[in-house]
Image (cartoon, rainbow, N blue to C red; front, side):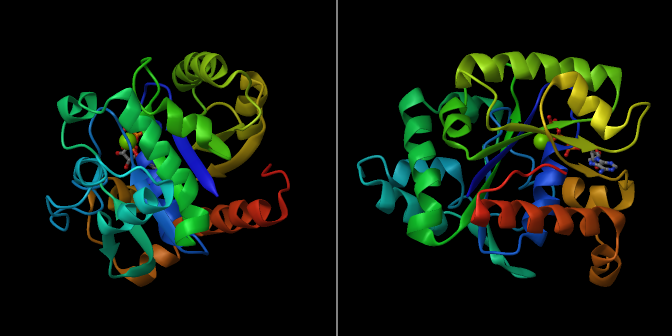
Length: 257
Ligand SMILES: Nc1ncnc2c1ncn2[C@@H]1O[C@H](COP(=O)(O)OP(=O)(O)OP(=O)(O)O)[C@@H](O)[C@H]1O
Ligand SMILES: [Mg+2]
């Protein structure tokens, strides 16, 4: 299963939610940080634990002359970081800077999307992708097109829903329709998650509670006790959603919350 988490502008919590889902995913998983503006997982959750020989750039250099999708997919794992406290999770770090992101050509994005789409079959791993904000025509659109499920992350606020509308317009243009796209509502605000999804005209895949303490562990690598984290509202909701998404993939049913 290839799942993409994305957003419009306004930083609704894509990276935090992607990390929360990844660390609670019930099967082996690869989390790929594909934010064109520069990856936040390496300097955040993984601060101080990511070497230069890992990540998107080193993967693309290694598979430059490699054509087979299965080989390109298995190279993804060689360039991923293993997370000791989460043995089923591999992290493919993203770009160090936006300039590095711009160095990826359309052909490289195509190659990456083929490798990520092949990973469930050839590596036995589901894949979760953080695309960052969909604010331009460049970037990881091939990966978004290859996804089984696109989760548009949005806060229940006018500002964030406004940004999500703009992202949906781009998604419709790039994908042709919104058949794979659902809303994932983060935090509290003046509107309910159902109202947000209804306004956007897409199904509601799930909601994450407002939980700033746990969120800062995922977004900024703030230290936390394992037991406290496991019991936190964010991790419990993420675990419930991760199990539901993984099960829906097995039975090919709707992901609606
Ligand atoms: N469920 C949550 N509850 C409380 N705070 C949250 C939650 N999710 C994210 N945050 C906080 O919101 C801020 C932005 O989160 P994050 O970096 O994940 O957003 P993003 O959408 O990935 O942003 P960007 O577009 O810049 O990559 C961070 O300070 C993070 O700790
Ligand atoms: Mg982010």
